[in-house]
Length: 438
Image (cartoon, rainbow, N blue to C red; front, side, top):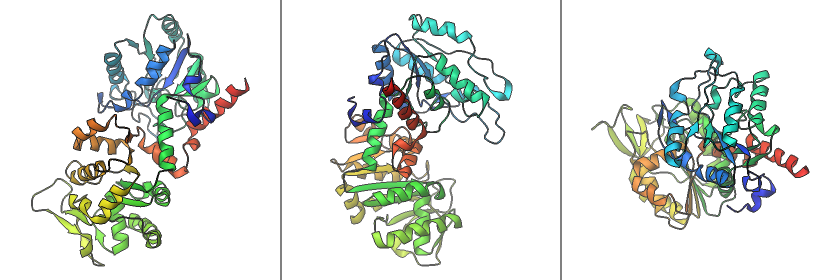
């Protein structure tokens, strides 16, 4: 990858001296649940960074978080095998044909791991002397200091820096300022990995898109996406909505009631309706699927409803999908086919029972062969892969497609209007200032 304009703001790993150095690298390998890898895509996307480290003589220490083992209310940490890095390590060992050492530290009940003890230093020397292929630390969130404040936090940051010469952050999906993504940069030279660079470059193509720009946004709850949704609305030329976001919008605009849509969501959606009266950016999907049950797609208990038939005061059962016929509508098809940039953060239906809307959306977008198509969010990508496996495999290496690894990070950056406001990215930029002054 060519440094390009990124090097003016970020310290890039290709600029670092890695020969003979111990390289601590933070990934977002959070792909395992209950000990099983759901999709290795996030791991595979980081292999280029790993290869480059080793090729240039670096000796890697890897780390990631898995799940949310820390209870936010009580602070207790569950170091359960179901959220260990073991399945990730096994996958990498098979993929890379090397052995990775996973150290075992003392777990202090509900307090997790107090820190990195001195026993690891001997193993680090073995790594430096090429007696082992790499080290993979336990789940970073098992360490008491990772999400803590005070003594344990500072101690963990110093301990991480003490076992390495260089730090590389390749975990764009981990945007929270924790020790392993933020604090450690204060102590050793720190750089952005290749995946981090790619994510930022492509995010800039969303923030400064080639036009016409079409955004497709859905969500299970309206109020959690208000900030990013309004930011996308202001930027987009056309906007397609799905899920509860669309249901709330329909309720707010047409004065109908839909089961499962809260009054709070409807009230929040009224501002979007008001905004769109003048701009007219929202391309309404004309046919929704109404279901009497959320337990499954039960014959005789679901039907297609036309938006044209809505009358103020009408009451409906659950809207759980978009009828595929919606994507044949002239305004919808023109919005998709005329776009030069398409950003998708959306699952259109209530899966797994109502998948047809999402499938039709992905197929309709693929018919636009010239647009840059960018998908953000784990659920969005997972549904694409499940519903259109052949299409997914055919476009993985297609330059017209890009799949972000961190959906939440993308939305946060869109809301802020820049990827450079993310705390871990800021930490790298501050570290660059230190490097440049040397």
